[in-house]
Length: 276
Image 1 (cartoon, rainbow, N blue to C red):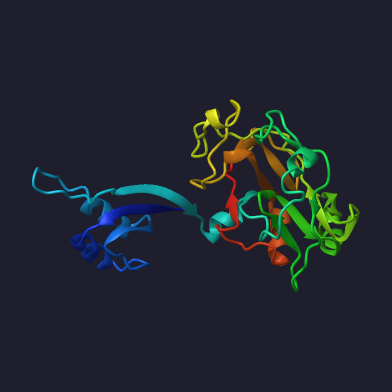
Image 2: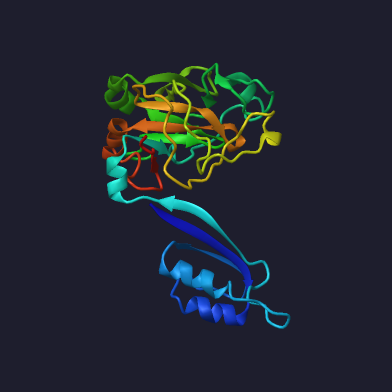
């Protein structure tokens, strides 16, 4: 696993000279500017450079200097050895749920009004009829990126035989089911995650009716389930920032989606689940 770090400051001329001498992926300019670098020799050189002892007449760090871990990436070996994955993306957004102002009250029930707390889907989405690009088989919706939509033909031929269920999707203009689009009916996991004391155990209860909303960042292997159970796809019981649940895939389903070019086999699309 490789850790990636984010740096920000209002860089001074001497800082710019030092940083650009390291041949980073982007040119650093004077003033407010940020960049990312993976953990390694360059990262440690930057850290050591800006932690030199300061004095009354000498400021080592520029104004606003800050560094935080931004994300992690995984090797092919680490991806290959995983049994399950957290799916990072659910397809390029294509339009919005309809009607925009009322769809949440129609499609979902929630235990906390407008907040995404223990909400459940109770009705199909209504959307404007999508225009499928050539070879495209899936997409997501703006505002609802943890919901997965597929071309019906692809679902019937590839996903339905795996036992994955679906929701109909309604044409907003007619109220009738679309003949070319379905939404995956993703079940909730039968087990909680071993999330306590992990890198994901960060939350803001004051923003979510008292329920924990865990970190959206990917700062480690995804935490494993407390108990094993058989599945190809599921939502986590836990909710993450803004109330979104995480989608977890089996290796078999991951391989299918990679084969059909729905996702790529890299850390931008899948995060391996930690083995117990």
